[in-house]
Length: 143
Image (cartoon, rainbow, N blue to C red; front, side):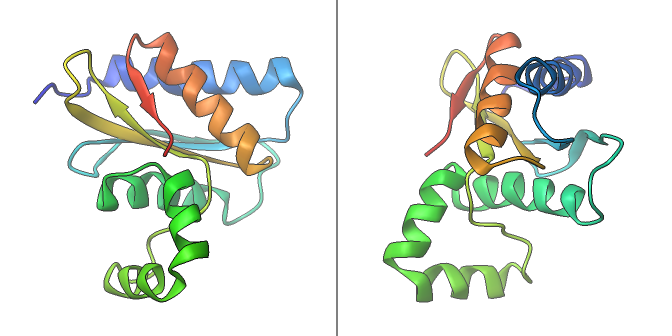
């Protein structure tokens, strides 16, 4: 498995923030996790609300925990709410099942981590994550 390096995580984070600035989005919290679920980089911009960092982490963590982007988890939550609720119970409430949690894969398709973003609409959060991952030369899996 390819390791997600700190430099790569910072590229993802900084590009996500610059994309948000270009789009004039609300302040964001960004969490970049490696494939083990450990935080490689995280930031909450000035003006984010108290829970944004936890929500960003929960989006990324959920993607890693289930092996699918949080957009797919959101879809599944709508189709099978009892299943997603049960999984989230097992995860002690750590999964946030809405778009904005994106898996990160390398050129060979190996999972290297996930990024979660919270602060604007879920679609905008996800777009910033995808931009960051692309800037790092990696592949984004949204759902």
